[in-house]
Amino acid sequence: MLNNAALAAVGAGAFVLASNAQTKQTTDVNNVKIKEVNIFVVAGACYVQIVADNGATGWGEADADNPPVAGSFLNNGIKQEVVGESVWDAERLWDRMFYGNHDLGPGGILANSIAGIDIALWDLRGKLLGLPVYQLLGGMYRDKIRAYGSFGIGFNRLTVEQAVAQARKFVEQGFTAVKLRIQIRQNRQNPNPDPTLEYARAVRKAIGKDIDFWVDINNGYTAARAIQMEKILREELGVIYFEEPVSDQTHTETAEVVRAVDSPVIQGEKEYTRWQQRELIIYGNPDILNPDPIKAGGLTEMKKIAAIAQSYGKPIMCHNTRPTLSTAAALHFIASIPNCGDFLEYVDIESERYKPVVAFMKSRFRFENGFLHVPQGAGLGVEMNEEKIKREAKK
Image 1 (cartoon, rainbow, N blue to C red):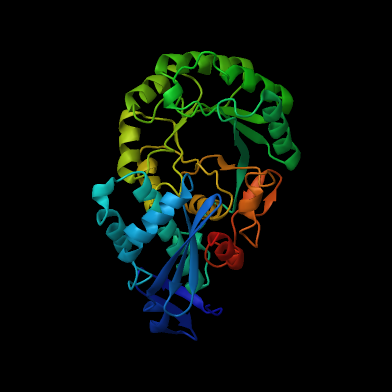
Image 2 (image 1 turned 135 degrees about the vertical axis):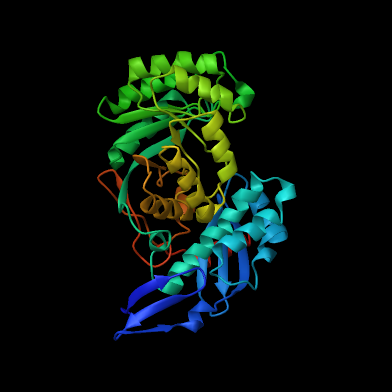
């Protein structure tokens, strides 16, 4: 870790320290290489540990929709692209992983798995320099962000009473905004009966009018149905956003909804690369983008997405339903970009679903007065429970 000498320059391949009016290149850190990449598949997560040849380590997280699949792809598909390479070559290593496996499909599991290695490398770089990751990504625009409590009903998996209890719990925990995920999905398009209004009305009544509230349809409507439902949700329940109302496969339908409704439309959770996000902006024109750091190729790709979004005047409000390294990466990312939206998604870390996952961390995020604070330690600023992760991964 660096001493208190001033950091004069940081590059992909070298950095210079200013000390006693003299500068010198620290070639020992400059030449650090990746010794090994370890993949740990545990219940609810797929973690990546990168070990450098000087013994330093960095941690990352791949998308956890199917941890065993992500773990297999990392072990058998992409980790060999980076072993033996310099830890500083962020752009080149991302390209090696992406284009070396591009024929397997540019989105989905490829981008989701690259994210684990990419985030671990940023954590490692920060630790080697003794700096938080947001400093390496461009510096700080904000040191905290308002968080909203997010939960899904699994298309009636939760009862209305259970949904109400969860929403109330978020308010009791100090959240000032709540999002209800209906999780209809494309395969149940325009369901009849549709649970959305029953659940949304009950949740709004439970949390009161002073809590910001919105609904995520999870891609389950056609444009016509989405337009009809947005009007009811906005006028009757005061929703402030309308999220993922139509299929991610039909950007022209997104554009139709955006033109017709008054609520800002959020979309982009399932667009995993800069190219996919560009196409969404051009053809769908959502008001707000919601890429996810552990889905969209990690921090290296997220910075590119942010730049493209900024050029079109689009804010980013990260999708984030994983409460450990994914949240850490999202916090450092939003700290470093000018076009950050008003909120970051977060979950109930005390729930039966997430409490076991949070136990893989020794440290905790600072959550106060409805805001999540950006970790200030070196790297991602969180300490993982390595012993527990390794023990659980063997089961």
